[in-house]
Length: 214
Image 1 (cartoon, rainbow, N blue to C red):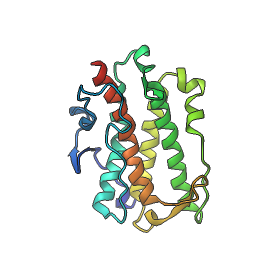
Image 2 (cartoon, rainbow, N blue to C red; image 1 turned 135 degrees about the vertical axis):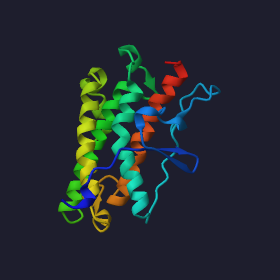
Image 3 (cartoon, helix red, strand yellow; image 1 turned 180 degrees about the vertical axis):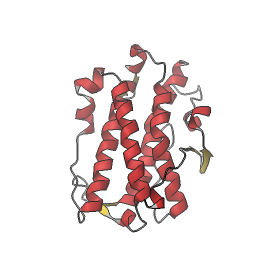
Image 4 (cartoon, one colour; image 1 turned 120 degrees about the horizontal axis):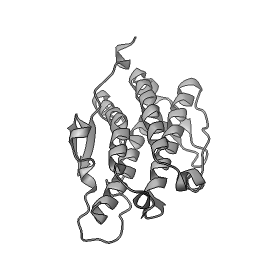
């Protein structure tokens, strides 16, 4: 087997300003310290873990950091919702409840995994977009047990990370076309975005927990 596909120990990369701190043992650390609630604002911020900052032309070391974030994301999400009651899971963060957020992350990352496969096997494919708001409005996302999307996220990310670590630098330059924007998206750019995406939504859950002292 290509050594690129070998197992790496999960790590967490938590954004604090412009710094990224590598925490090798996710279970031994407080998750997403950058999402702290400061006690001053009653309104939930749009991006409690920081706005998305696209990075282009980054090197192998940075790519591995992004992959490590993707690898660690399911464990951080599971910890973020651990011990929450049904009522707490149905608490809204801006437009969506915590329950819906968990379902959304699983839905979104399934789509991203498939998009990677399409881009790797077809020449600049146009991917299938989906209406994320309509998906989280479905009954399973509104009322379903979060253990199901958490389990999906764990299995999915095992497959996704295995794929990512098997990919060459050239393969990360392959791309797909998004039909709604018409933009060409390189897989290196998609990796950067989805490393942030999991941190973004987990940060929303952490903010609520700190806001309500759960």
